[in-house]
Amino acid sequence: MANIIHIKCPFDGAVLSVLEQPGLQYKNVTCPICKQTYPFMQYKKVVPASEFNDPGTDYNGKSGFNQEERTVFQNESARNERTEILILGRLHIKGTRESFQLKPGRNIIGRTASNSGADIKINTGSDRRMSREHILIEVKRISGKGFVHYISLYKEHTNKTKVVNDILYYGDNIILKDGDTIQLPGVELIFKLQDPEETLK
Image 1: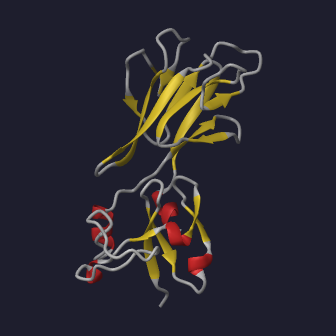
Image 2: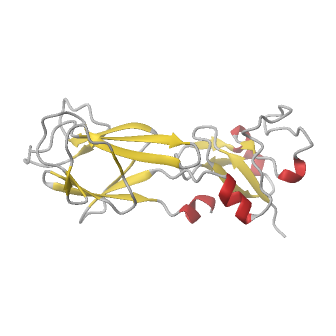
Image 3: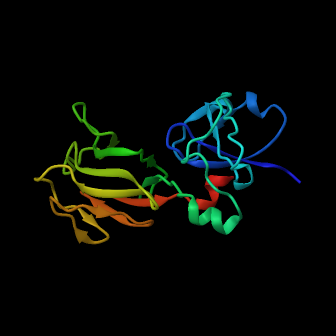
């Protein structure tokens, strides 16, 4: 039977499952959550319950694991209850194949312009109704819930913007759910979350 190793991403702390194989320690592993690629040796091993009495070592040769790294994997049910599913959302432009990956922290979305301070710039052609910095999506890690995505207007005076057909007012701070639509002036975005099952493949 193939041996599964549980490792933790050094960037966002996501727990990944990888198949043990010859030469794995010399390979690079891409985290499906943050999309960052690191050498396997930089990941920390998540210790199963059966090894709890053994201080163990991580892949850098350091002895011992802190409490956070000692994630219990007694069975699939316990795993789902005890492990946060860290999923970052994507914004898809409706009617196109263009999409944008959100990152932990602040994501400013606006139209493409030479002096735009937006992290995600959307090409609106000659339509200038969208502000250069129009909306803010803040991705926070909440204990027990994983990543939560909050949307708000970046500034007070913008053209009409809707989230799931409800007008977004300045000062609103709305939690986005998978499939929610964001109607910006001239562009409609669809907020999508990656299938949790895909994060462990």
